[in-house]
Length: 156
Length: 219
Image 1 (spheres, chains in turn orange, green):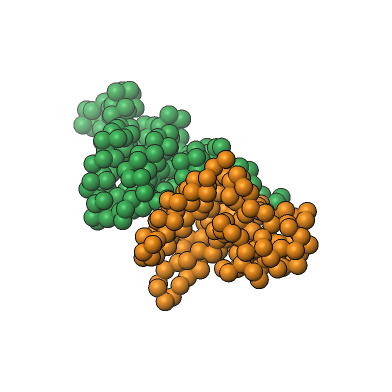
Image 2 (tube, rainbow over the protein chains, first blue to last red; image 1 turned 30 degrees about the horizontal axis):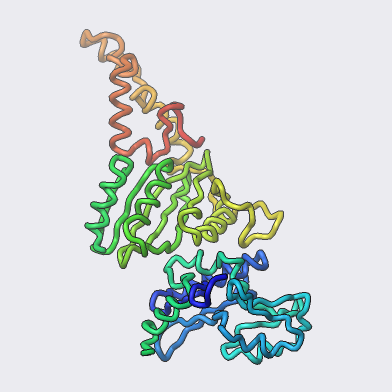
């Protein structure tokens, strides 16, 4: 079993992002077979204050709040991979996770009537694959944390 | 990376495969390659730097060919690979295995121009299923007007576009010259030279003359 530090996560570097939104297109295409930004499970927004693009994407938290808020235990953190996944067969569509997540990643799918969020594309995230600017990278959690601190200027 | 540096590295990597290499500004490189070397050229461009970023593909319908321009940002310098796909073929290699984001652009081009990318998924991007029109594809037409087309073909076949009038024939007779002047088309080596000259001057490409089939690509 991989340790927490070795578990893969997505790292977003706003300094490299060009705002092309290919990641959103790829995400929607992978999961729904259509090019629809609204169906994407990650979003890129423009931050006018810092004049940067910023991504709203699942961090696959070490202690996921969405899972804690789920009344049916439909959201589980996979112990092996560290990915926080929603079981659509258990989800009752109560939207608790959408309110609990501090950055609003889970979204209620009006068609499927369940909550949806990033499932890490079974280990090969399409958002990272289609990001030609290499603003999205798949890295072990420890390395991603180190880079995040450097990107955002946080001294640990 | 400056354009000159990128250009010299591409020259080294591709050699004779490059038809034309231009660096109009210090941050812009254009390389023109034949369609068969497109993959090599795109690989070479991505090989310039590990952080080379695929930007987009532009497709231009030039009448007889579809011109494709693959734009890649190499650390601030935009390198464009230019190639032409003849409309008789309408097939080109898919580069999404080198640059995955190219897939969406290729599908868009296929929807709008009808150009097939070999190896690309058959899914459409914009146009609905069952819609087979290609809205941005123009009819296959060259620059020559209808009345000039036989003249151009005659020029390339016989190196002569006019007939000799009776007055000229009479004059030749009076001067004691042979009835007919020497004809270029009678000598294969002369015709070959003329075709080479037409090719070197860009005449064949410009008017769309197929040297092998000995006729214009459009009628």
